[in-house]
Length: 574
Image (tube, rainbow, N blue to C red; front, top):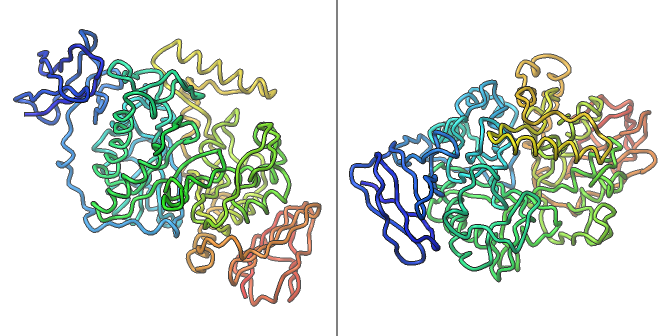
């Protein structure tokens, strides 16, 4: 026997279709409908009819084996045999994160096929695997940010069973797992939530369509839907945290914002499960309230992505100034990002044509993630080309050194550690021809405005295939050398506690804008960078005993200075 429940406050009648029969549900309090149906068990398919229309998949479906338009399937989460009973994720403060896309990380693009490559992450020194969204979306492959069945792992990746196998395998190797979830919008195709209730509001719009109803009439159940979704991932799939996509697009004027409610409920779940759980936000607001404790008037999230760090580093090294890079480009911006996390802290933004941000006073560097690349910053380029397409090997080593010696939590994007040549363009597999044409045309218009005409067709299967990692690359130069560089940086971070202390107030930073050199301290280490096309002499604050890590070796060094070759970095140790 199974209990079928669904929230549909405006419906006149509601029925579940199972075993070829249509059985009426009874209306209860708060707009919830329910019925117990005999002779049903996990593995049975079902769907709902609302006021005679449908069938529609369950808004809380845990399994969509026939895709987002097909029936839902019952799942018994307790049936999976976990082997991670004693697992506890390590502290986020010591994390080294690795963002991966399940469909392109391995040649077959499934949860199970990713497992043999986990040992590579362990050898690299990764502590947390961060998966791009896996909630079911239309078609076979895509980035996952147009998910519509938020409770159901994407079937082409391996569905519920496959995701559990991957998480269990990660935990067996000492890897925590964080999942990217999208609560600011749903995709346009296969989105049936509006047939059941007021999940969306016309009072706000997001860049991707209607906003979810977080503060209007009947919004309590919409928030309950999202909070329960988060709990499902953390509890039933043993995930160690969630990355919250684009929280600046959550339209919410509540006294207790949805994000604060979510953080509170995750803290309660953490206490019940007796294992650490984390929430990491993506936001372009430069608002430290996201990660301030609730007792201090914040939302209580654990950390957030630091796009200012990325933009400053990228614009300085590449010279690019298009779009949001218009606010960056000076070495002073890199220095400011290292010391303040945000570059824009209330000053004027040329890109936005207004003042932007506020200072992150008193917050540890552990509250921010630093990265030179991620899925957005690679995939939002016209061809999805990586940094290796525009930077030299020396410049790539500089970027990595600044990420891993910063006061922040370092994050790598899949393949970055070996300078992968495979691009990561935007790709889709929409089954609606009109939607497919609209997405492709929209992307071409977006980049035509920037004077870029060559944009891969997102629907072309080759666009997707081009994004698959080439796992033969790490075995040959120059990739093998870059991989070793990242391994040594991560090992150094693990060996020297001050690299993990999150202190932004002890950098002793000095730089020369015209000379393109930068120097700062992390405990017993001094990081010296020369991004000029010729050698530079970089002053040192005190004598050092040895070179901990360098690429290439310093041309010379003494008690008062170090001379670096062009595009070089040296980490000296007292």
